[in-house]
Image 1 (cartoon, one colour):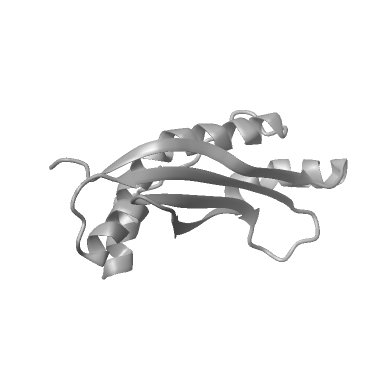
Image 2 (cartoon, helix red, strand yellow):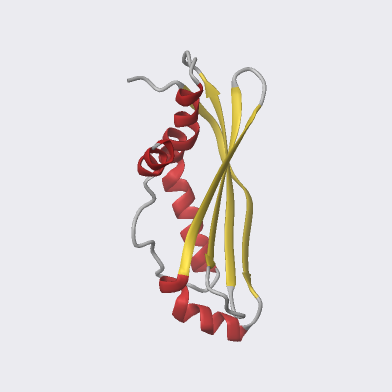
Length: 141
């Protein structure tokens, strides 16, 4: 199957790492691998000439109600051009929510892990890989 899109550009459009003080840092360092959860939000905006901007927002935060929290977020923007004949809305949705995400995942993951390391959390890795195909399948069922 040939790809019906082409990535024209991909870049970090926003990045944030917030830890308010040393007490919070020490508290978070012990909890980050257990209590912090990843959240993903994908939005798209039609541009001109069959181009689409896809914004993938990754948040990593403690979901528990505690005072000492750090917050990590990356907004990764991808500009794609639809090159094939895409007639169905569901086909375009799969391209945006699954195919493009699978292709840019190594860049997002590297950027996110670099940010965590540079924020004082070296050696952190995600327990399991993001599986956009599975997430998309769950969304459509």
